[in-house]
Length: 131
Image (cartoon, rainbow, N blue to C red; front, side, top):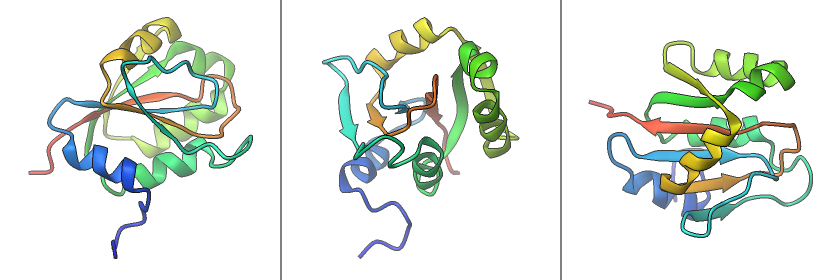
């Protein structure tokens, strides 16, 4: 049995297959997911699992070198933006429009859909290397 906290086999598989600069999206319940992008749907009900809890679990296995966050997150959900800043204090950030973020999901390895219903609770994680 796995020793890390990430137990979802689909999510763990995607992370293990990622290479340097590949991207993974952790998203709220409402983000549109392109047909061509793998969907890992964890949503059970509104708020379950939460965006931040899911992100914490992902970070037990994924080395992140850069995060992409929508400008709308900072304006409309500032508490979430602050929480992300705390989670990634040393990581490179790029603030983009929500429309640009949605466009980037087309090239992501997967989108992880949470039950989060906070507006603009979405982040793109760019894989780094752990050596």
